[in-house]
Every structure is written in C-alpha cells, then in structure tokens.
Image (cartoon, rainbow, N blue to C red):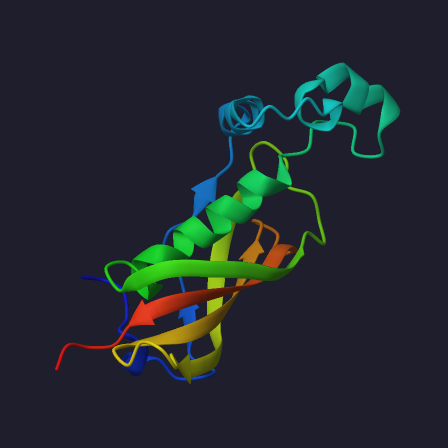
Length: 151
C-alpha cells in the first residue's frame, strides 16, 4: 500500500509527486468527446487558431483536474481512501495545451477525526499542477475520508 494512513499525515506535509505526464491531443479529444463536451475550444483547431487568443486548442480543464488529482493518488490515498468528499476552490490560472508536461505537488491543509467513524478521518489536500515552465496551471482543494492505521 503506497497511500498514507490518516494518522500518518500532518498539516503542512508536502508531496512532490514523482510522476509527470505529457498531455497529448488524444487525451484531450477522447476526454472531451467521452464527456459529450462540444466546445470548439477543445476540438476545433481552425476556430482556435483564428478566433481565440490562444491560437490553438486548449486542453479540457476537467481532464486537467482529473489528471492532477490522479497523479496524487499513489503517495496520498492509494489503499487508504474510503471516499472522495468533494473539490473546492478549483482554479485554472493558465491554460494547458497539447504537449505540455505537468507535474503535481500536494499539501495537507486540514485534518479532523470523523465524528461518526472512529477508525477514519477527514483530510483536506491542496493539489497544484505546474507545466514544464513551472507555471501554475491548476489548483484545487480536495476533501476525502481516509482510514486510520489498523490497531
């Protein structure tokens, strides 16, 4: 089990996740079409080249969010998560483009014992994704129910 037990976590603990991922055109097109998102911003290169400030397609922000959280799982919640409780303060300060390579950092920002489940606790993580130029491209807080170490 690679994830941390709730009681192994401390507020302020930082994870610099070793997995990096280059986002491809296929990632963007598949995710966008699988989720029935018809936005030209993700699918129409000509539209983006001639009618947007970006000059190219922008990667679907829901894919960016999913990738950022997914990269964090191995070191944080793999084998110890009970449930994802929600995402807050989701922001995308810079766009992600095909060919960008993302890396992720996670900080534990809050911990509290579960009132109804004595063997579990609620942890709040802040995830941050950066591109290859170290520009922040995504940030969110994620709350989850996490197991405590077995007695």
